[in-house]
Length: 479
Image (cartoon, rainbow, N blue to C red; front, top):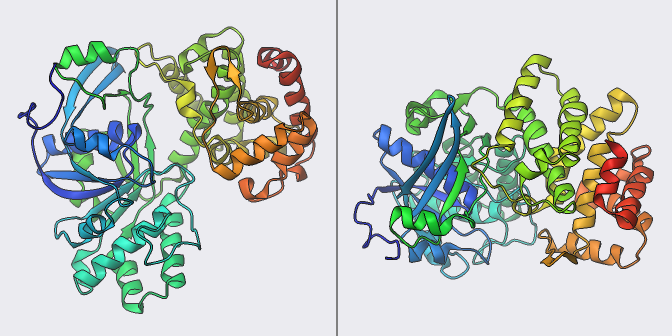
């Protein structure tokens, strides 16, 4: 079987490089690239994507080995009909690793037709690191790299206002555009960049908040061989996602005119405010995802569907969704129930094997943004803590202990500082000390969570029960 590349797949089209994308992972390839691919088909956009590897270790080299080509398998129900499609996605032109070739990265800023920047660097990616310097090659943080790129573009085009960039962050942070913009402003101040550049950035560039929604299990390990047979190529970058998709972009009509994805028959919305869409989605889709994953995994389950259909873990998921998170939202109850029911249907999608381990990357910042606000609101409104969310946090903390589940090695993936903290805390072999140390870690939460009434006691109790009797016993205690 031939290896997929542009020589073996001459049907792949080439387009003008218009988009710089920070991130090469499964989600962006199954969401952004697919949207651009569809937009190229349905409109005159005609754009391709240059992928920039945002961290030192990544998979840009894999992309380049296949000339940016890969197949996307979409499966699910659409208007009651089953969908099981496999398409060749041809919109990535090349990948750049700025850690290996910083000059090639800066050269992107000199390309006249580059107009858009899109990113998904996880919730931890949009952060200001004062250790970054303008002459770093590259700056370690994503906002630092982006500021370097924008400054080089401003210099190269001598401040031409028509050469500003339109920036769509896709990180799952509320008002991600405002956060990214503020980080760039901080670098402008830290690096003492010229007033002219600051003015050009503010007036000629747009940083727009967005909300993304599509479940992406990623590389289909269990069906990869069959899919390769189906397409006739050896494709090491196969990607898989559900058919459902939603991209909400808080931007004016003139931006939509330049990026006409909403004209391509796609569920892409340009709106005055993404806030109501964001709160609903983060709370009722990502919130349950974040806590069901460690609870399910430590109960011996591997996929989201298995968790939802398990007699015990399914009740836990239902409790978190309908009893604990849904009552914290302010939209009409009927609308929230409909959305929650739709989410549960998506979780049970028979075509998608969404492994819970793929959700547990950076679980602590995810819990902070997705579940902690609901925990606080629930306590405020009900006068008691949501036991399901607290058990979910205990599940994350227990997962980060590492070790084994049967024959499987547990390897948590997060900020090294968080990993080190958990290793040191678990070395005490005392769940109460672990709870105290995690809740008191202000570098994780931005506050001391021990101040939340009753949380330390309830978390300690949950951790001790998991430690002594296992996760299923802890789940049975609350359902």
